[in-house]
Image: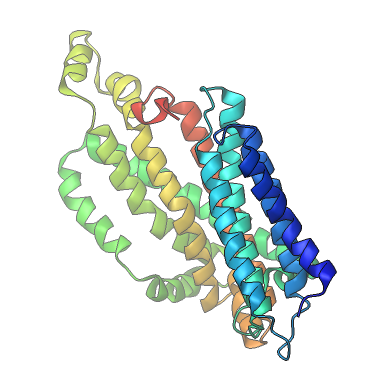
Length: 347
């Protein structure tokens, strides 16, 4: 069982927390109370994590799992306190709260992942612990960087720009020539419904094994969402606004540039955010069907065959981080360019 020092280390943070809650020297909705609760929770989680690494099959110390449950409750309470803070609409405090809550939530998931995989001795081939994935990431930095450049910088970005750009231009062309809407939209819908596992081998045969074939797959996946959203956004402007532009003797292109396209920006950015994830998925899956000895999809497939699951998860981490940052960059541009829109006013 636990030694006296271990019991003291595990119990001290919670004892301090209980004392603070009994004294109640501050408001629970205050940022200082949330900060103290978070610090105490982190201290308790750290002590539990250290103890988990000392467990063995012969001495599982099941009593420790009650303490883990208590830590989960404290994590929940800590994040709840952060969401209840009264910021008085101060931008600085708003930014702190908006960044703290998702950071704590993500850190909590990683903590529980580490606790469960190490505490229950989950085989690495099934699910490696986060610290093993971090070690594999550190050892394979140069390889992962080369894979990132091949998949994301070359295939994803080029295919994304071509697919979104062509979808946007053809949407304007369809709006200008209405009969094309009945002819091109069904074809675009048909192309978007093609399974990627069927399209990718064909693109490899057409464009070769390098990144060009993956970019072609990305173009196919990103074209139709941009086309449909742009058409919907262009048609969303009100009749009263159009009549006002007509009364000013505006021609088609003036109305499009000054009224209809600005009104369509939220729809266009929605398509760009959707395509930011579709493009990465399409490029990675396309690399399963033929690629040089570099790329995220190639790395995942080859390392699974070698049973190096920690490297596979490190590659998945790189893909998830790059996709999330790409999405965040587009969302930041959307916020700066559509601050006038009602959906952005309360953010």
